[in-house]
Length: 198
Ligand code: SF4
Image (cartoon, rainbow, N blue to C red; front, side):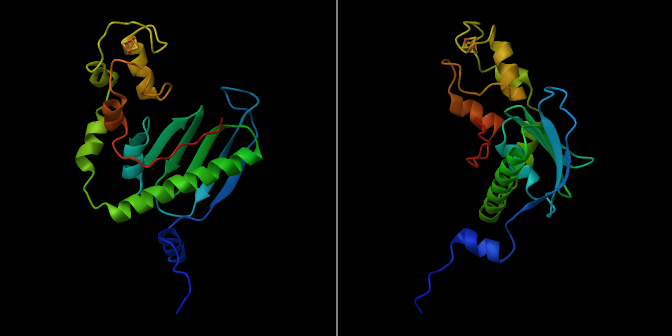
């Protein structure tokens, strides 16, 4: 037999394990509060997401995981993205329909990376989840020199740390602290994912 063997991703797609699409339920064309030229949309992911939320929470630097109801939220490039465990998805600060499609593709990519991660890692995540849940600016602040030299572009080390936690600034702007140390604290799981909307 000479047929080409399907890839790992192809195998998972064939078995229906990976997510293939997201159906858009509502595009709300009323303006976003932050920018009247932007819109928001709601969509449905046809999959229960409770198994991927812990992995996503630990891979996204500024994510929030709530218990009742179980939701995962995060911000990227001014978009607020919220997912419910039953697959509800809401995204704000969107330019147009093309961007809706683009963001949906990126979310599918992200969820599929988390599914693949879960298939190949059986480690319990509970203790690192609790650690991340308790993360406050003060936890990170302890790692910084507190010289307020402004090289990161912020007035003080505390301002910079607060903006890392809120997702407004990346974690690698201070020359005095190893960004890998910060990364391990704010996003201990590496899924190599980002929404780069330029
Ligand atoms: S560059 Fe580092 S040391 Fe300087 S203010 Fe920013 S966080 Fe503080």
